[in-house]
Amino acid sequence: QAQLVESGGGLVQAGGSLRLSCASSAIIFSINNNGWYRQAPGKQREFVARISRLGSTNYADSVKGRFTISRDNAENTVYLQMNSLKPEDTGVYFCYTDGPTRVWGQGTQVTVSS
Image (cartoon, rainbow, N blue to C red; front, side):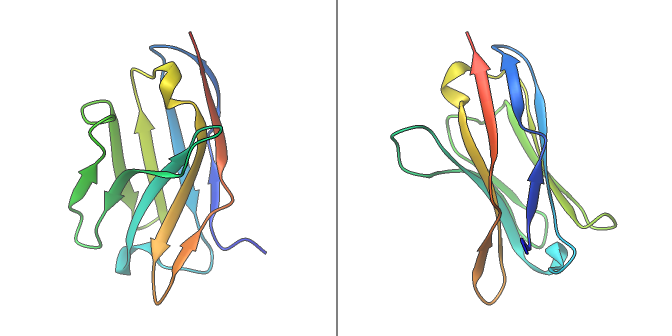
């Protein structure tokens, strides 16, 4: 049974927006650092965004100003708001949480058409 479950992916036109969600019923996000990576076809997985347990955020240069990571502690959910999407944002997006070990979600597909 997956400990992290992502949702919110889909097909969107360039310039559009999507909001990804990452939820867990087994791991408390607020005590961990959490984040998102993505993997495009034929490429390695790359860092997208991170939110620390204290709420500080970091972003890859390629998404700064367009993506926003946030966490709702009451809902125990981490979000990735993606605006002004570009075709190069296409890929499978994976959330993670850093407890004693890093735990990954199963991924959600994001496809941006030109």
